[in-house]
Structures are given as structure tokens and as C-alpha cells.
Length: 391
Ligand code: DHB
Image (cartoon, rainbow, N blue to C red; front, side):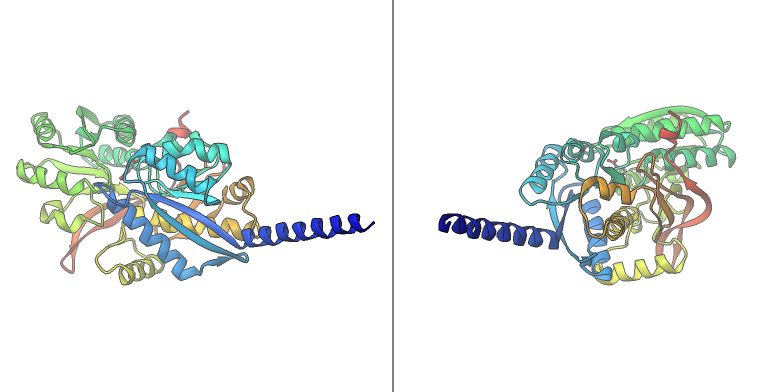
């Protein structure tokens, strides 16, 4: 009898300990934010980290009774490192969401981890169409390159640009841009006079720009990843192309608001298609830009930053809907179909593809108060990823 009582006491104590543990574990929801914080794409990491922290500063670090803890890791733009960090964060740190992913190869490297562990993976930057198909737990808050390139191609053909030459960075988002610019441009009546792919690492655009100039297009269409625009702009001017009469058209990645002021007046008149501009009109964005600049005086929020800001909003809203439950399937269910007002305008998470549906704006580089901005002049509303829609 005594033995049995003792057994009950011991068992009771361990159940209590377990329950206390579980209660403690429930109190904090950890989010692993994996980004390139150093190297050539550090601006993407810095923009997203700054925006995620701003979101938390504005909205508090408690949601549905849970404390939110952000763990930021630098993957240095090495895919193997992204994968290892994702695994460590999930297995050792017990994060309930992994987020960030500054470039396509980095997002793809983490996809098997999110699929196997059933952990939501919020892609806040990378833009190749196929990414969301690599894990059912991926949700994207950035953009797809086909969204931007297709809008640019259609607009160019319908606005007096009869011949175009495309120059893209030679990796998956560049290939997506090339294909979707060409498809929409030629369908709307334009003629391609050449295409070139430039190596991603240490790009030298000079010889490609010469080839483009020799083909005598009305415009050169460009995709380079965020951070490489300044190198492109410098070489464009060095070749004298700014005075050649050849127009420059691009996805919004080239005239990135973070570095646009460094391009100089040669950038004036550049036309691009993108989901976000620092100069996007409206009260929501005015408040976002002011708060972002106050917290980060040397930066202007760019299109990558809103991917981070909206990604945090998505996580917060999903936790509210699940009442704080962190089960991967419950969070995914809460995220699918969610619509909200972003600094960039209205957005929805497409429940079928888990990609973001958003306005794509046509913008022209203009000078205002001594600074260069992408000023919107037309809107294509509620653009879905055309790549998935075409299959
Ligand atoms: C990707 C990276 C970028 O910096 C960008 O501007 C667009 C796409 C990418 O790797 O998917």
C-alpha cells in the first residue's frame, strides 16, 4: 500500500513537472529568421531584419497570449548554411516558424526541412515561381518575378517599345524574368532582338551592354537581384548608353529604393514594374516609411523590407486565428486566404498556391526634394503568379 502511494506521488510529481514544462514551452513562440546579413546580398538581410523588428516594436511581442521571440541567423548567402541553420533552429531551438530566405537557392535549401518537420516557412524575399511548390508549408510574402516581368513586357509593347533586348542575372529568378518578359512582350506585339544572361557572382555587364547596344533595341529590359543595380547603372553610364536614346526598363529589383540615390541622374526616366516603392502613396505607407527611417536613419525601406514586415503580420494574424496554437497545419490553414492592407497596398495569400496576390505598379524614376524615387503612374491590380496560372 505504502509503495503504491509512493509510486503515485512520484508519478504525480513527474506529470506536474511535464505540465509545467509544456506550459513554459507554450508561452514563447520562437521564429527563426534566416537571412544573408553579410556579403553581396546583405542589404536584403538588413532590410528584412529592420522591417521585422519594426513590426514587433509597433505591435508588441505578445500574440494570443504567447511571447514572440525572433532569432536572427546569418546564412552568408550559402545554401548549405541555410539548410543547417533551419535544421538547428527547428530541432535544437524548437522554433515554430522559419522565415527570411534572401535568395532562391537559400529558400530551396530550407524547403525539405519545412516539409519534413511540418514547420511554416515564410519566404520574405526570394522570387522564383517554383519555390512554393517545394514544400506544402511554404507561404510567400515577397513576390514572384513572373508577376513583375509579365506586367513590364505587356506595358512596353503597348507603349511604343517595338524592339527589346533582355539582360538578366543567370540564375532561376533571372530565367523566370527573361521568360515572362518575352512571353508577355511578344504576345502584345513586341519583338525581341536579343537576350543575354550575366553571371550572378561578380557581374561584369560591359560586354553584354555592348551586345545589347549593337542590336539597336528601343529598350533594354533588365533583371538583376537587389543590391546589384548600382553596378549595372555605373556600367550603363560608362558605356554611354544613357545618351544613346535606348530606354531602360526593368523589374523593380534594379531601381531598388535602398540604393537608387547612388545611381545618379542617369537613372532619371527608368521605368520598372514592381509591388512596392518607398514613394507609394497613401497613409499606411507614409507611416511605414517614417517609422522605418526613424528606427534606421541611414536606410530607405525597399521592396524587400515589406516582404519582412508583411511576413511578420502574417505570422501574428495566423497565431491570433489559431488562438496561439503553433501546429504547422493549423498555422498554414490560418494563413491561406488571408487578406490585409500592406504598406504596398491590398494583398491576399492565394489559398491554392500560397503565393502573394498583389498590385504591380508601373513606376518612373523622378527626382523629388533632391532624392531619386520610383514614382507610380499606373497600376495592374491583384496580380497572381502568372507562371502557376499558366500550368
Ligand atoms: C531574388 C533575389 C533578389 O535579390 C531579388 O531582387 C529578386 C529575386 C531571388 O533569389 O529569388
